[in-house]
Each structure stands twice: as structure tokens, then as C-alpha cells.
Length: 362
Ligand SMILES: Nc1ncnc2c1ncn2[C@@H]1O[C@H](COP(=O)(O)OP(=O)(O)O)[C@@H](O)[C@H]1O
Ligand SMILES: [Mg+2]
Image (tube, rainbow, N blue to C red; front, top):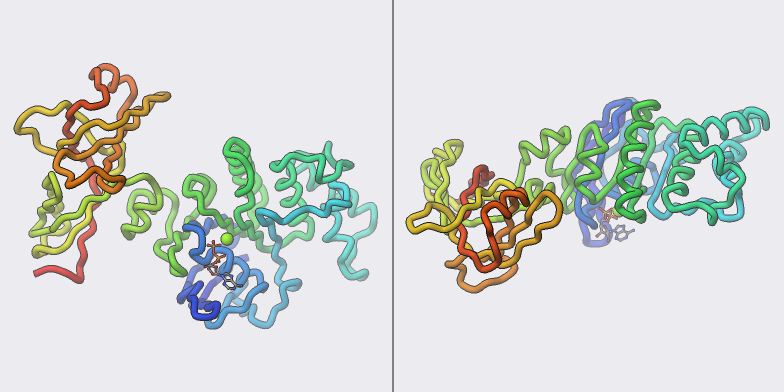
């Protein structure tokens, strides 16, 4: 079932939690809502579910306005970060719950319930836990059971709000792969909320980047990574170094370096920002006349295949967290070059992403 979100706004007191959000989700898609804490992800999810009413705008399910459709009639299944299972019920009874509370006329028989619950437990690969109580399960197992419970009533839409947020990194990784496979089997239209960019990029068909109640960009993981629409998106999707400067007729002058940026050939002395990812720096030993940012190696973390360098530009007014530059290189290369802390190096970006402030200039 497709979902259309049309110009949805929501205010709490004076606070604008959502500002004119529009979004189309296709039937069978898995879409991630990604953004920092407080940007409105949960509010949007609750509005889609019917747990919250928007001040403006509407939600359509399969083209039908849902404004007057009650939560129970919307056919949505939920999994929340802390949506505890019923502690006094076995795993089996937890999953059966949604079926047992159906009106008598549509309630399945006991035999049908048994078959359905076991097939769902098979689907989440935990059939062997049917007789356990939630307290006897690991966090990851509990979330898989919560998902089986949500699927029991055959929802048309599955809403997942940071379902793996409380789990440790290794289990999270396993569960996100598992969720992706499950979605490929079932194709239930799903919205997955997370503030973890890696999780969103790995799991989703499309990613919706949100910031301060607005949608910043919508696209496939590849699109948003390769073509971030705004400085916010670029910064949110990975580690970046930010440089300030000015753009003039296709040339960007930044503190310590010059970049060509043909797509900004029209810029007339406009304010510009350049973003460089740590792995996009070429790192060399300093030699007089070198072109690039001259910096001192303050700290090197050489663990595993990647050496992470923290550098302080030599012309920084005063060393601070803000002036610190992060660069990365293969650990092997770091060792081959014989680098050590205190060395003077020169950094040249192989790739930079430049944003020009269009409102400024001349
Ligand atoms: N019921 C509420 N009353 C007042 N403020 C709320 C309410 N729900 C959410 N907010 C505020 O709206 C903003 C967005 O919240 P939320 O949608 O939960 O963000 P996210 O899920 O992206 O972290 C937050 O600043 C939050 O404090
Ligand atoms: Mg939230």
C-alpha cells in the first residue's frame, strides 16, 4: 500500500515540530527517515499511524484520505525502541495477542492462531523460544519477537521507530541485515526511523533526510551519498572537514588552498564553503612551496587498516577543536612514510564539495 504525506505541519505550543512535509512512499518500499534527535521523525511516524493529528496537511493510504480513519482501522503495525513485550505472557502469547483481540466475527480459530504464530516465529527464526518469557530473551531476540507480533495482524504498513536503538553495535548490525532480508521476502510497505546514517544507508530503498522539521533530501542511499543536496546532508552522512572562503568565477579561495569549481563559474566574490571527507585528502610530507594546507600531525590513531590523523593547520590562529583537520590514509602507507606525531605535512583534497551562498556576493 502506497502512502502519501501531503503538506503536513505540526506545532507543539510555539515549537514547529514539522513544517510542510510532503513525501510519497510507494507500495512495498522500505523507506528510512533519517535525521538528528528532535528533528521530527517520531512525530511524523505518529501522524502516519493516526496516533497524532497534524495541524495542517493530510495522509493518504492507497490514495484515500485517512483523516477520519481511526488508528485501529489503518492497518499499521508498530515496533518501537522500548515497546516492551507483555512480561507476563510467553513469546507465543505475545505474538498471538493481536489475533486474540480481534472481534469474534473475524477472529481466527485456536488452530489457525497456533499455525500463524508458529509460522511468524519461524519467519523471525525464533520458533524455539515460543514458551519462554520476555525476561528470558536477549534484547535482539525481544525486538524480533516484537516484529513478529506486529506482523501477526498482517499490517498494510509497518512503522519501525529506532527498533534497534537500544541494542549494542554488533547486534544492531545483524538485525539490520536480517530486517532487510525479511522485507525482501514480505514487501510490506515499511517506514524505518533512525538517527544512524549507516543503518539508514544500509537498510533502506530510499532515505528521507530530515532536519528541524523539514525534509532536506529524498533519494536512494547512493544518490544522497553521492549528491548531497545541502551542507546539512553532506555533514550528516559522514565525517567532514569544513573550510570557509570565497568563490569567484569558478575559483574558490579558502584558508590555505585554492580549488577549481567550474559549476560556480557565475559566482562573484560570494561566500563559499568547502567540505572535504577525511579519506579524500592526499597526505604528503611538507616541502617548501608545496600547494595545499600545511599542518602539523597532532595525533595519529593507527588501528586496523585505516590510519586516522588529526592535524592542526600551522596558520590556525589558535589550535582548537574547530580548526582541527581530520584525514585518513591506509595504515600501511602511514608506516611506509614513517610518519609520527609532530611531523609537518601538507594536505591536498582529491575531492571537495563546494556550496556557494547564492544569497550573497557581488
Ligand atoms: N507531545 C509533545 N509535546 C511537546 N513537544 C513535543 C511533543 N512531541 C514531540 N515534541 C517535540 O518535538 C520535537 C520533535 O520530536 P520528535 O518527533 O520526537 O523527534 P525525533 O523523533 O526526530 O527525535 C522535539 O523537540 C520534541 O521535544
Ligand atoms: Mg524519535
